[in-house]
Length: 370
Image (tube, rainbow, N blue to C red):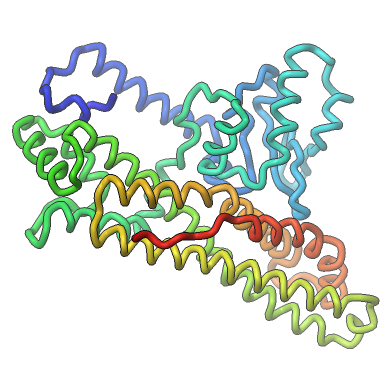
């Protein structure tokens, strides 16, 4: 139980508790240092160090989604010198068939079937698969990413703070400050604030800290996905504009089936982005309903609805991201003409689009909170 959950009894923190808190903070920092933050916050890269791997060489590797939305194991990456990528099935040709390897291989076979490797999807999927994670801190965004998402989090946390404090002036401006007030040396003031929140939310005093922590986490997840969507949509729009220009080239129009592929891609990208954007619009509407009368019950309904979409939102955003990354990397800084771009579209960009479309189609419906 967190420090805030115990504050009503106002016990003095023991030396052991202080040490445990310090160790937890140090461990979180160590995870940030051990894992590349870009990978930890990624939709398409899974540092295998997060998983209970037996073989050190596999624990140092990563699983990534390629432009076809296929999962491969990246044993090393030397930048411009290249990287060592292998299909999961090919690992048996490299490693001895020990019990440790077999256990690792079973985990990797599960992982290659996941749609996305973002931390929120992973929480759901690892729980479903029964794969234990020794340290849950590894399934959280890095501190850097959380700070980047502050602008998104503000729109989610400000209404809660206004609900708690009403129209009065408050020094509390964000979720971190709201949670930090529990650590105030003035225990009487902290208890007073806890009671005020409990009364506003209609929940027992002891449940307030858990409520606030879950509130912060679920809306941080929504901010994370919304940030990814806002990054991807302009890139998709630019790609579709360029696709029309490429299709208008005389040489390209002589290529068999390119025009048909071009039309299919336009329909797929437009359908996928319209559908997932509609999901976020539904989340926004439900958020406003939630804030009109926030309590434990309405929040739980909102939380369950958002979490039910983690896997499909993560999968669709992952798919769109790897597609746009592949395109931008191949044709950065004006490289490539219409014919080479058309060839890449036929060989890379169209592959896996039906897979992404099917993920979006499989998304649960968004219901309106009453």
